[in-house]
Every structure is written in structure tokens, then in C-alpha cells.
Image (cartoon, rainbow, N blue to C red; front, side, top):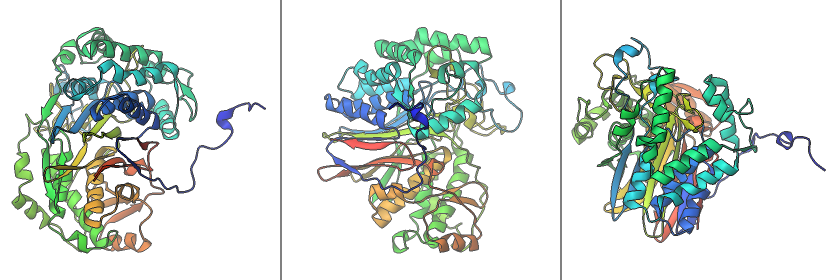
Length: 534
């Protein structure tokens, strides 16, 4: 018997809680979409290393989860290889033609259209990681993504939900021609193909990225910008270079958390942990209002600093080392009132769309990698017949005159995406990330407290309910804490909103923890993804 419409045979809601178990293996991949995780695993089985697997997974994610990233994304990575940690900043600069007079005088940089488009850096990250650390040919790493694009893939439930929202949000004809060719977004369980995406990836593979920055794809991007009122041109693309950077870090109760330096917001997570290190959190109950209050207050102080100081390093007016100095962190901690919520005038977080992945291999290599278009599909600008959706990372510039992060030509904006990595002494401990706009440093701090102060395992630390500061004394908290916790926080002056469910609004994380003889890989229940290994 044939169903008239198999897509409507049942509901795609998941009303009952489900427990995920970790994957314990010699080689592992964890990310937010199962087919992308399988692409990385395929490369590992083919003799590739963790860096090859990371690149293959990242490229596959542009096909199977376009609601959070794409070929036109930016990327950052922390790579443990050769006994040391390497940082890669592959974020792009604003177009040279984006002068201040072309933007609104006040308010925010518009999210949609050309105003927020910056030079895409993700393609350069794939190529750079492959060239420096990979063991397989670059074209082999692109192959799974090309297969998914050309042969099609079945759209996963959460991706289908955000795809539908994108179809309702974006009005650009080229977006709809590329991502809604049937006049609507694909539904969960429906096959989606993109021949244009496959051809673009083939050109990137054949030229090792040259076509994207200095060839035919670059020409098509620049031509579309010129025809539709954009400022990104061929010179902007040709001038782009990814940058190897020294990670920044803070010690926390015997472990060290590493982040990418500004223009990323990893500094916010480090400042928060530096403040929390002044308190004896291990002596408090893991989910007590006393502990949560201190964490929330530390994060508000950290965001106050982050929104004031983080910018393109060439424009910052404060030094990272000064913001992480023990004396400065102690002085910030002294501002916390243990019994009352404060309002240090931090910025108001905005939502974001991001993919995170982590990989590890039997040789001890580990990768923490993050890639994003910022809000969903990004700016809504899609280069016709290419599958290239351009990011809107420039929406994280400020329009405040004289601010280090003020929008202007040739600048890297404040970036929300941050990969995390933990070491102890000279040994790798954990590669992890928590996706979701300004939730990311908040997620980093919360999982660090759970794992290293309360010895919760990495799967439990990702499963646990989370909180998120959202401006002023407002804080959104997921269900799952004892009822008395919410009331106790309100009594301290927090304006608490309890979320209806644990969702990606409060971040979606992945983690790989190094064991004595293998890895513990975990994946967040808030995303479609999974951990895989062998």
C-alpha cells in the first residue's frame, strides 16, 4: 500500500524527553547534523586525520545545514597537532567600499541585504587547514558534500523548521530560486538537491579555493554585488587571507580554557571564568541559586567589557592581556553582590545561526571548528546559480561614533562564533563549542563549571539546563532546575523568564574529551546532530 503523502504520515514533533549516550572510540566526530558527521567519519576511515575530517565535515555542513552556515560563511578553528595548539582566524573584512555614510546614522547595521555582508572566509579556512595539516588530497575532502548536493539528502527536522522560517523572512529572488525552488522550503524527511551548489564545490575543489577568491566564482560574486547595490568587489575577495593566531587563555581550577583572540568574543568567556575563579564554586551545589547567581553576574560583567572593547585587533583601544590580568579580574569580581542582581550595562544579545564541529583521531590530533553565516542563511544575498549564500557578520558592527567596533571599510567585525579548547599542563583535555550567537561564551562558562567544578561528564554537561543573560537584569532560564531555584533568583532581583523547553535558543553544543586511551564524544540534544566514531 502506498501512502498518498509520506511526509504527512506522522508528526515531526518530539514531545518526550530522550537520553543521548556518548560515543567512546579511538576516532570521533561530533556535529550538529548527522550526515555531516558521517562525512567526517568517512574521511577518517579512508585514512584521513582529524584535520581532514574537520574540513570534510565543515564543507558538508554547507549543504545539509544551510540554515546556519554556507559557502559564504566565516570560520575559526583551534587545532591540537604536533603537541601544541594552533589558532586560525578565517573571518573576512568589510568591503573597502563600505564607508560610514552608506549606513544608517543610528540604530543597528541592517541584517539583510548588502549592508552586513563581509568577505567570506570559510573557504580559505578549509584550504588552509588542509594544506598545513591534512593528509588526504583536498578534493577528497570536498567529495561527500558534492555527493549530498548533487544526489540530494533528506532534510533533518530542526533544519526544516529553520528553513521554513528563512523562506518567510527572505524576499530576495535569488534566495528563493536557490533554496525554495518548489515555491516553499523543503520539509523534514524530504530530499533536497542543489546542482548549483555541487558545481561551485567542484570548482573550489579543483582550484583549491582559488576560483572563489581570484577566479570565476569571485567574478560572479563581484558582478552580482555591482548589479544589486553591493560593495563587495573582486579586490576585496582577492585580498582576503586567513590568519594563524596565538590563542588567548585563562586558568580555571587546574585547567586552561583557550579561545581565539579578538575579533572573536572568546574573551568574554575568559573574563567570566576569570571572575568565577575568585569564588569557591566547587563547594556550592551544582544547580544552587547561589552558584547560578554568581555565574550570571560574572557573565554580565564580562559582556560589559566585551561589547566595549572587542573589535578588529587593529582598532582595539585595550589590550587583551590587561583585560585578563589577575588584578583586573579580581577587581571585576569585587563588583559582584552575592545577594543582589546588578546591571553593568552590558549589550543586548541577539540570535545567531552557527554550526560547530569537533574531531579527533587515534594519533592524538583534535580540532575545534566553528562556521557561521550569523543569522540563519545570513544576509539573504545569494549569488545566482552558485549556491553561495553570503553572511551578514557585518551586522555585529556598531554604529556608535568612535567605538573600536564602529562599522567602516576594511575592518573585521565583532564575531560571536568561538571554538573552545581545554588543556591541562601540556596535554590536550577537551575540544568543545556551544553554538548560538551571544549565547556562546555563556555556554562555554557553564559547561566549564559543570565539568571541572562538579565533575559532570561531557554528555551530562551538554544535556543540563542552561541560562542566558539578555540585557539589564533579564535572564532566560531553561526548564529542568528545581522550582525553588527560579524563585530564589527572582528574590535576588533577577528578572527571570522560564523558557518553555530546552532548545537551541540556549545554545547547541558538541564536545570530545580525551580519555586515557581514546575519546568521549558527546552531542547536544538541542540540535539534530550526533557524535560518531570507530
